[in-house]
Image 1 (tube, rainbow, N blue to C red):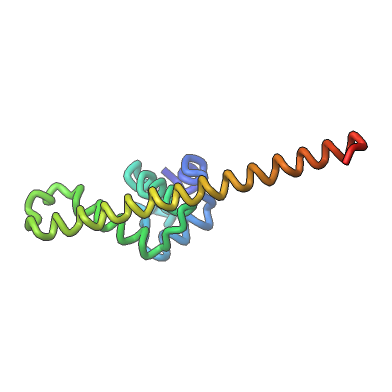
Image 2: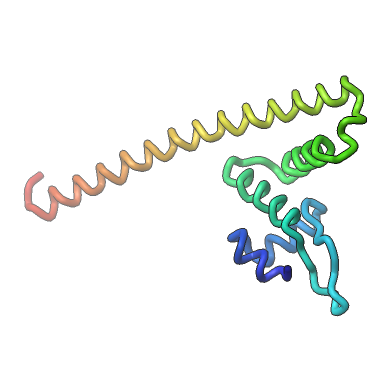
Length: 133
């Protein structure tokens, strides 16, 4: 599929998708005769992983590391991985999962505080509109 279709499916801008290509996170699987980027479902899935990591504050390097680990573990030759290498990758994957959980909790706390603030403003605005202090 063309980049515009990918942007519509992922909610990412064309510029962002191009940037991820330039930094090597998600390269299009092919190019058309005219040089247009062509993406597969697997490419879209990679972009969705990145899209989910971004709000949690993961860096581009961390995103690339996670994608490299999952690629290696998902590869059909993963059975050929040495046990120590596989365990190391699984441990790092676990660290990413732990970091994601912690960052989600921090976001929940921020959201709760923001909702409290919005409720306080709503209450205050209601008081002022009603003429009571």
